[in-house]
Length: 126
Image (cartoon, rainbow, N blue to C red; front, side):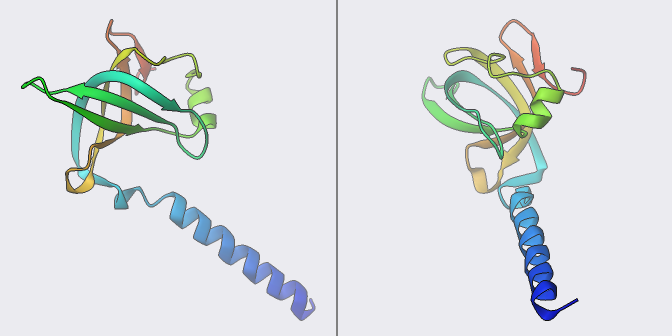
């Protein structure tokens, strides 16, 4: 194998590993020791890879509101679970259980998503 081919292989391998490491660094954003449940109304949806995001307005007990960023799996994983773009719509009330954001950030990594009527959109028993 000549040096150019060897160098190209080394560079390609390094890029693949750095990309994978950056993509799977959820421990930087989410505290794996803290889980919780939030309920809110979907204001916006980012339906694209590498991960979906739903932006929710959550009403607190005192009547104030906060915007939460719900992050979920990639499109291929969702498709395998039977979740489509039409499973949740803007304006719908949903409840999300998952891993909470670090340092009190208003983020949650979705493990389950349910509609207000109890319909399970995504979760362990889906």
